[in-house]
Length: 167
Image (tube, rainbow, N blue to C red):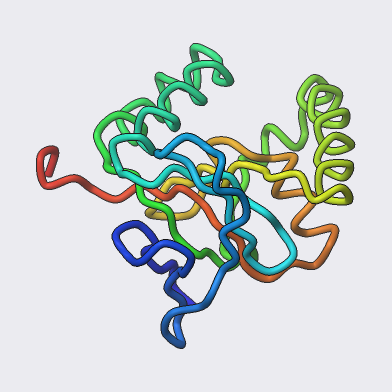
């Protein structure tokens, strides 16, 4: 199944291959630009508007990435629009060099444990951040690990698409 667009459709539903899928909007006491949605077994905290998604993606990657990441992936990060989509977990790709790095493994291990605890307690998590052309993870390795561990088939993710401005 291909990723499907979520932004721009009625609150509380997301698009899937078979048409609209209902999600449960959780709390109403959140800021106007954020909502919590239960999709499958996971509760997500999502931004509603594309410019808010873009700000979140840029700030997150700027916080998490190394200088080399910007040299390699910067154009993909900055020259694209970002949308909330339903994604098949099996379509998500990882940087193999990261998974082979002892430093990365040591850094992500406690994050995986945090994600397990959040999942078990139903605390909302942010969607993964994926490059659109190949679903390479830009942010969310611990969340991706949890999705695989729990055998969750689909998730919500912020996915890049080529902007007409940059095309």
